[in-house]
Image 1 (cartoon, helix red, strand yellow):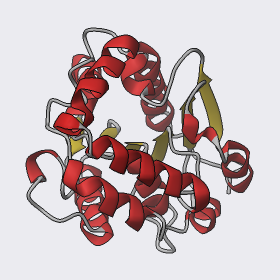
Image 2 (tube, rainbow, N blue to C red; image 1 turned 180 degrees about the vertical axis):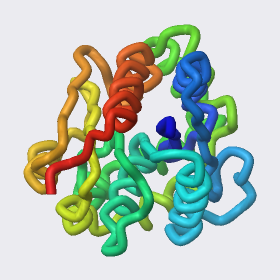
Image 3 (cartoon, rainbow, N blue to C red; image 1 turned 30 degrees about the vertical axis):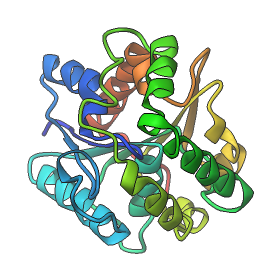
Length: 244
């Protein structure tokens, strides 16, 4: 059976951030689905909860697992949620995991600073969208530039979600992950803070650092990220498993 891909977006954005990946996978006949988490995209009116987020991921994974082995991929907040989900005491039905731009424990001074910064942006005229658009225009190629905001920005969910992320126990989850695991970071990603810790806690994992790339690695270098998804699919289709 062919590997199935489930894609989980980061904070503020939505399933639309994966447009380049969905096109790539569709062209190669790889079944893929990108979900919207509560409080984001098509579910903007819902309240974000960790339980709702995990239910969304689990529902998509179990549906896809009926058709083939599942490669789960998440970016930023989505990556952290996927790590926690994959490292549950009762392993979920996934065959591989791609965790992008998320090798940082969401606690302490770093998280506090990020929340203060986000609140400051939120108080700007038009909630900082003028600056956001200028930053995207300066860093992303034209064909992916609109993808992050196409499903709307979850401004009202962001601070709540950041606070809830601090309750995750990623350090305990990582050693329990027993499927092929790829960490993907941009060279200049601010969330590389605990990169060494993550790879030490998951010694069977592989780390790929994409040069000259920031936090938005899947949109900034879509060809590289897509190639990695293709590699993951090929490895899982070939029956690759993580060491026990």
